[in-house]
Length: 477
Image 1 (tube, rainbow, N blue to C red):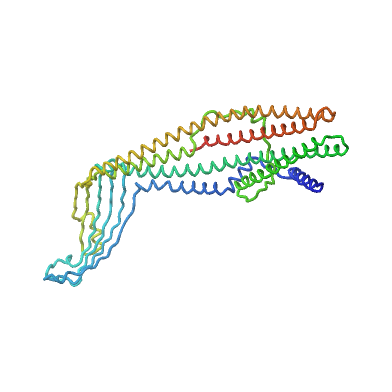
Image 2 (image 1 turned 135 degrees about the vertical axis):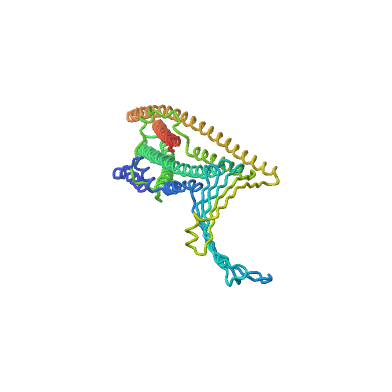
């Protein structure tokens, strides 16, 4: 039994002495480690970087696009025809151009076509013109298409741009929310470990005191100077304290694993010294009573709502009749040589002008109307959901401020109780040395003092958690 005691005391002694040689770790240093090594934060950071680049997708919607194609076609005439003018015909069609969808609802298209036609074994009896057997066509064209109903004034184009921007913004705020929540959780983990270490110290110290009292009473009993009941009470207290120490040690390991996990370390041992709770500072700290900004989850939902409204606009516009005004102007030149056709395509040409309208609409008008109404109702429901979320945020903020004030007041009272219990215990120990009180009374006072210490530390830890949660409302754009 004595050997086990000695081993136990040696372990406690090693634990407390090891703190003298461990390095100090402040909250700021710990958060820096978390920012550098935490995989969740690293993922969020990479996501933010990618979203900063991907937000330029919105610029592509109405940007100028370069396009072109080249096509080779060879065909033979139908042998069932009575007259065969050629053996086969070869067409080479080439086009290069620029197009743009304007945000004001019209599309412009500028392109240049260079085509060639060659008839193999052409029978000149049918046409003596040399261009009939082989020619090159150079055709510069300018086109414009204006939406007069669907996508009027560029509603679809603008909605596509808005949807891309706000969807990207929603993802960005979501990534920031994930990162901030992880940092806040890390801060809470830091203060929880501070409390766990302190709780283990308090319970170990209480056990050590109970062991001393038991040893003292055992010696007095052997000399018939103590009651058997006092010894039994002391033994029961020691067993209870051992249980509390064991529970505190297990809790310390749990907190240490969570603490290390935040900085990407797989261990249940934290070798560094942590700061202690500054009770006086916590008791006098002034809280920020005005919410600085919306939480990131609210910002993300606001951006998602704007993206949904843009999608609803697209859906509504796509189900409207299509009624467009279009016009084009082209210059056509046909020559026997390619470069001659290109050279003469501007000044020696045959211009062609086109102006027209086109209409396209579904026969089932009622179905289109229902779809448009459904799009509007979906956006309306999401607006209501956002209002509910904003209201809940205000409730959460008010609860947070009230809890901060309540816990601070409780901490002040708990600290006064702890000081009173300490004075009462010290006075009772003096009385015991004078033989004027009982061991049972000392054990009770020891328990009350330990409980008051733990209560003070727990309130301090909870107050730090609430202060960390305030950072949810101190966001940036």
